[in-house]
Amino acid sequence: MKTFISDFNKLVKLRLTLTVVFSASISFLIGAKQQGDIMWVNWVLLTIGGFLVTGAANGFNEIIEKDIDKLMKRTMDRPLPAGRMTTGQALVLSLFMGILGTLVLVQLNFIAGLLSVFSIFLYAFVYTPLKPKSRIAVFIGAIPGALPPLIGYFAAFESSGFGLAYASVSESAIVITPFILFLIQFFWQYPHYWAIAWVADEDYKRAGIQLLPSLKKDKASAWFIFISALIMIPVGFLPMYYGFGGWVFTIISLLGGLAFTWFGYQHLIEQKDETAKKVMYISFLYLPLTQLVLLFDFIPFK
Image 1 (cartoon, rainbow, N blue to C red):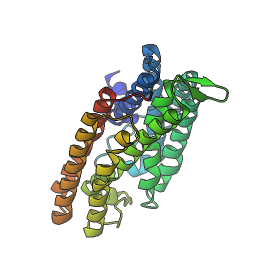
Image 2: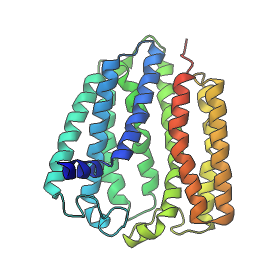
Image 3: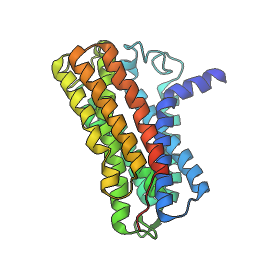
Image 4: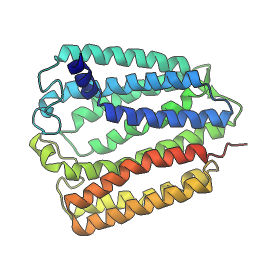
């Protein structure tokens, strides 16, 4: 049983899945605060549905990449390349999680359920097979990677007609808020994943995957990491600009953006794995911290 639990955790990429669920749940609470009513039962359902949908997407990803995973040190111990789980078993688990998770999210809000299906499709069946073929995969992968805030936000609202969210807030607020949350997470992924791609470049190349912007660890790729880190400064001002982020959030986001930029600049100058790791580590801290701060420093639309 312990082996199965361990393999299941690796199949769904537990840490990544929990990060995604955290992002969606924070956005759910922001949406609930915006309409003035937090339904905690729905929050639990979102957490369960989000976990299942994300786990399914990761499961499909590992099924498709099982031969590639055998070639990389960081992935060769996953259950499929290690031979502890068959493709059929992984497929059944992933299908079950995907269907059940989508059904749960559809019950909360039709748009949330629809976005979850789109996220699974884009991540598992577009981004995953594109990774060994083109560096454009990073740009494609950033879309499903930024969808959890939208899914979580819309799940906080009841559905009307074909799933359009409605509540006691203006329609413009319902459109603007999740879109900004999406943009923050969308732009955050570039310094995050390019820093990871730099650190794991040798391992990726062993499997025929090249995700760095210039396909190698050089100044051009370092420039992309620096510029993408620099972009996080203006991105952090968007919630205040659109009227739902307070000063505390804006200051924390600014400090985080400056830290991103400083470490990105250090990496541009030195171009070492150690400096890329600093960009990677600040990315791990930036997103959950700013999302939590925004939840408590959120200004509801009038």
